Length: 397
Image (cartoon, rainbow, N blue to C red; front, side, top):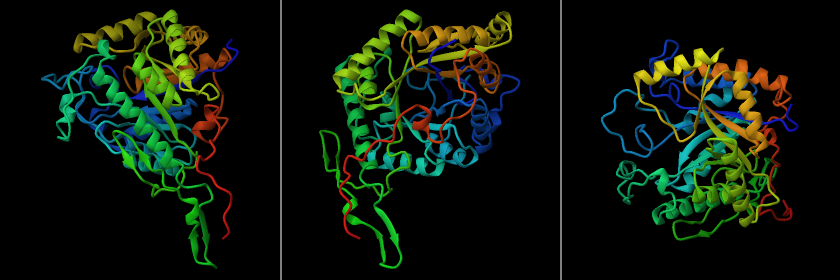
């Protein structure tokens, strides 16, 4: 039994994380660009009382690793916008968090801040954002404003990489200031006096940096959560610093318990260096999962998929039973991870194995909730609603 229940989320991407997932019997490749497909997946995750789902996205066609799209035709190509998927699904769900990916490298913080704030309103306080940098030259070519040299996961300390992540940190800071640019009670809506807002409670953020100069305020009032959840995937020191300094949840990719402990130590050190010791920063371990009732069934299914398409991952790949996965999660939790983001190898198969087999197993061990305890995503993760940095004393109406 776990002393502290863990948090659990799933990462949704097309037909699943294995490139051959779309060829499985229960896959729905013809439905990937429909709202009903994504609604079905998120509702299944909500039935399992998962904390949140993330939606993958990018500014280029799906690719393997950091390589630009080549001639490979054996995996899903094409996707819908993640923020818009989340907004469509939001009214059809009630408790689960919705965390779309939005790339920062070629976009503007004002636009992303407004979109995520809108999602928070549409979902009633369940919005988040997975911050993503773009290091692909083919994505830069879509915009024509800058060139980006190719880099690999084993070269995450290069100067160009530091610049991308420094830019991402500024981007998040601008978004957070824009979310605070309206005080909570800025809207008066007083028909008798004809005053809809208290203009003194809207604030210029006046952010000036090397990459952005943003005056503000936002055109969207402060989101229901105050600050929607900010999350980031990190594989090395520079991305760890971004997550520890700017995010509420950092996804990491350890391959064993000892490495998980080392990574947690590095992220916590970066959190302290960012002077965020008093804040809760969750560290979630990412795992790709292929689940079945027996180890043999799981291995055979994985082998069949691998025979159809080559697959590798930045994250550890687990192939086995839900009970064995529960063992692993509880062990890695002892290394300091506060939760996990599971990447289903195939949907709906592995998603249903998570919600209908893994979740009951964790519940039986006292390691996971039986029902939702909060109505907002921050509440589910034990995060308070932040005070507004620009809040002033109430002005006369």
